[in-house]
Amino acid sequence: MDLGLKAKVALVAASSKGLGRAVAEELAAEGASLILCARGADTLREVASGLRSRYGVPVHAIAADVSVRGEATRVIEEGRKAVGSIDILVTNSGGPPSGPFEATTPEQWEDATKLLLNSVLEFTRGVLPGMKERRWGRILNITSIAVKQPVEHLILSNSIRAAVTGFARTLANEVATLGITVNNILPGYTLTERVEELAEAVAKRDSISPEEAKARWEMQIPMRRIGDPREFAALAAFLVSERASYITGSSIAVDGGWIRSLL
Image (cartoon, rainbow, N blue to C red):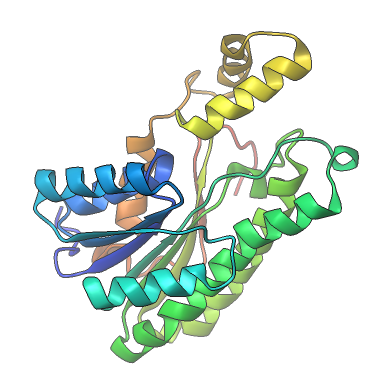
């Protein structure tokens, strides 16, 4: 299937590892030009170099901390100069600390809001005018299964990612007639550094091994396994493609059946 991405420019946030890196690789394989950002400059440069040599597409890497106001705007401006107008935006970030409500501080709530919500708003504000002018655009937010079924001890992620979902669903209606789609993709337990960190936190809290923590999650998943980032990235690439032009305002899970709701 030709996804129609060869002439498109995609900005993928937090793309030096994990789900962001997997999405960037999938888009590069489809021929899209890439603007990548992440906090770790060295790792990001390595990823960009590898994608350039493997797929022969333009890739521009920008070290940035998108939880800081102005950084997402800087990434957009620098990326446009280096690669071109941005057709596709994939928002993404690391997760905030785990823990119950009473163990989280006001500062942690503020930091999580900057990371998970404010960065999405700033990225979207920066790319939307160009998408509207060209009457074509794709905005895809990487959120979490937690927005449909809260995950225990993830009060920060459960709460603030839900705000991103509300924002995206509302924006989708506002720009639907302009050839712009806005969707969310919800990763379940996937083999990334974030899941390893959560397994370590559960292991410490419950006095078990990280392997036992992951085995617990696998027993909650109908497929009885943790997902691979490439499985997630395949759907992400479709949702930002020409072929997905009639899908907007949706939140789609890639979770092996973990979410138990009907919709």
